[in-house]
Length: 114
Length: 111
Image (cartoon, rainbow over all chains, first blue to last red):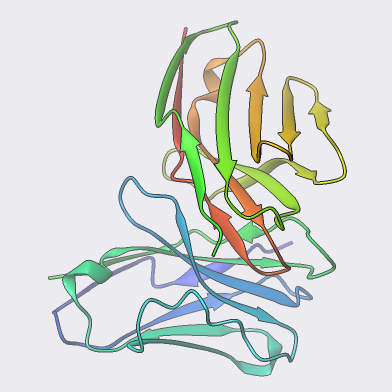
């Protein structure tokens, strides 16, 4: 079946602009994660959604970052007033949500802030 | 919060040799430890995982060991092949949804 998809694949924006990144998880997966991967770095946890529960936002680096998940499916990560240090690959993953199970990653969105 | 350290950052081995990647974690409450492989330009994929009630797990050429007392866990790849070349990430999870990843190890298998 279809895997996790993300759009856009690449985004170049000017400093100070807002951006929206989209994630379509695998159908039926209740858990959804957002990570940030900077060059040469690991995966930095940003936010976690599980079903209809309140999201775990503990990883968001600042109040410029927010995310929502509509109808328990598609998720949007919004970065307001982008800064150059926001440049990274943003990865979304989903899982069945039944305990600690495999996360299926999307292809990522490469964000470049100029 | 949890802090995961991963070593080495780069590793080169001859084809057929073994490769070992080590990770340490700080929070003794962590109880799930997955390993992900990310090939160049591709997305990370789970290759093996281990839970805290198990000391070792094997899957063909791949094995993971966990030492809860010392708070470290390792990935072992035997009989390495060129297609094993990738970046490998370890992670530790304290609670569902909270995953802390290492900074990755770039493994190169030389034919």
